Length: 150
Image 1 (cartoon, one colour):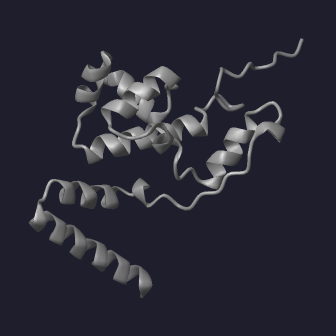
Image 2 (cartoon, helix red, strand yellow; image 1 turned 30 degrees about the vertical axis):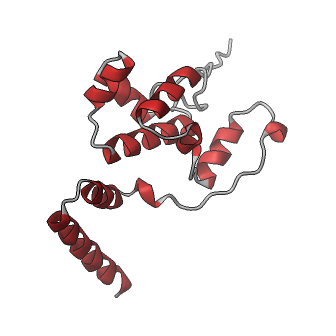
């Protein structure tokens, strides 16, 4: 008798989290960091544990529609923020999880520079008006870029 491994709801064939859930988690993480909010603070607003927020941010646990709405209110962004800047690979992998891709609309995206930690640090420093730190971050970024160009 051949056993067929059942795919968990919303996961890939090999049991990994849905790439779209991972993308949403990254967007939650980015916005939370930009607001200088800890996982504990976000969890408190949602009446959850910080471990649950960690699972959301890694994409290990899926965020329900109502919970995503609450998160969008707390983080002060529209719902579509969580789906913005999704790369083509994530979109293709997400579409592959559909039983029929005829229902998926074409989607285009550019690389999301907000995925980079140095950009997040720079924006956070700017939002917190830490001018000296901004100057240092810019110097570091310029040095890194000049090395890549050479």
